[in-house]
Length: 249
Image 1: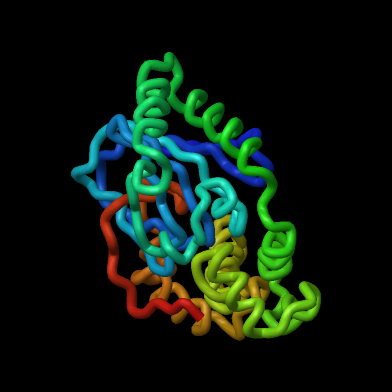
Image 2: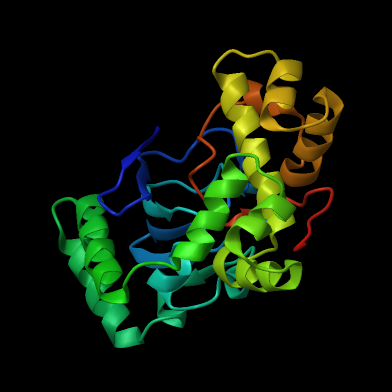
């Protein structure tokens, strides 16, 4: 069973999976990065360019803090592109002794998920706010604005925007725009909108365009994904599902 709720960290979401059995299901790219608590350890899920599978053999509880696009690099202290399509131990980014203390504290807590969020709150306060420019870039692309319009609004040239995007999101603005557009379309379809109308409303040229994006970014069809059972698109896992293509543009 998967559930999520708004975090006390601005723009973030807390999620947990109480049982990870059943059929494997692709977890789609969302432009986000996660701090994970799983198997008694702390890990980081970087920004994805293709779908991942939640393994049907991976039992046990898992929880995470999902940071909004562009906000996690300040928290973790590394550029997002260094973690693109990766799952790494938190001790690989922060001092090992510090991570061991945090791991023990969470493991001994009566509510590990609440302890994980409290840890994240303290760390976010110490790290300071994310770059407001890249947060604004993500907001513009989430609204469906073009990359060119977004660059103009940010006062950046194309190369500057691409460089800043690699650090903030893990990939360039075109890839982030595709990912956010796919997520918009899926949200509209889940609300009951027909595929063709959802594709157009999300910014695709037609339903065939949406189908291609689904194959490229998710490695599956829209129908097969929506007919699946299991985890929502936010819970991140560790087993890669190769997609038709991926890009850092």
